[in-house]
Figure 1 (cartoon, rainbow, N blue to C red):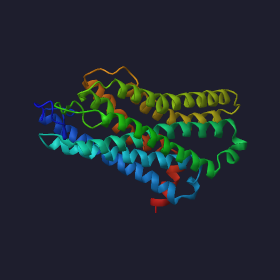
Figure 2 (cartoon, helix red, strand yellow):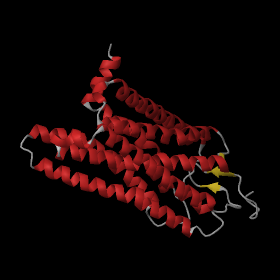
Figure 3 (cartoon, one colour):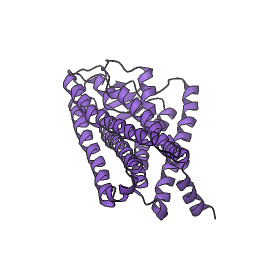
Figure 4 (cartoon, rainbow, N blue to C red):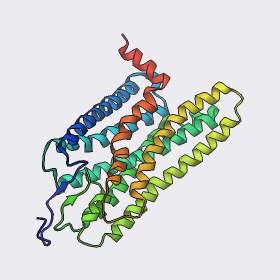
Length: 307
């Protein structure tokens, strides 16, 4: 397949994160622990929010959507990576690669939108506490969640269509550990300029636009907090919003670096490390830094499992 430039690629071969057997063994156990923590943490958040009526608020409604997206994100990549650590030839069919790209883009772009929506929710809660319940009604929350998933679906459709429409002949070796557009377009046997421009344009829509909303929200939050007289009130706001800000910096920072910078024709080791942050690490960290340290969630956990 790699020798005949006229033959369309039917499968791709990953170089993975390492070629050393000992290193792959260590990475297998590391990724297994990360995946188990991701699944257990996010499932726990989803279950707690569902069974505890005190968590039936807009913030936790969006958090449940975020946990579901994280669960899908991690499950689409990590199990395959675990298998590839144990085999010599790391392959995926063209159809499997296409499915992975579609799902990753869907849940990843949805997460981008959800993080922006959550910052808006915190902004309303801090800046307009007396009007919060009338602004963030259940119907408004549902519409914002549907809008987030719809925006993810649209970006996924555009990016995956442009990426998979390119002809792939001859070279089928991906210097990566999963299928995503920046890695795949480097193998195209035609000029990928239009595809790269489409990916960049969608990145502006789903990355830079939400980041702008987040910055505006936090500017308003900080302005309001500065005017607060109560030190305890300031601490509570910074505690709630600080966790969200950590998630935002980790997720958006790595995603913008991967999708919004000029594309080189080669995928290097640094690119793969950056991809790990938004595809693997943040999905594991979200439940811990954003919710399991939260007092309401801890109380819900004690109520559900403490007995």
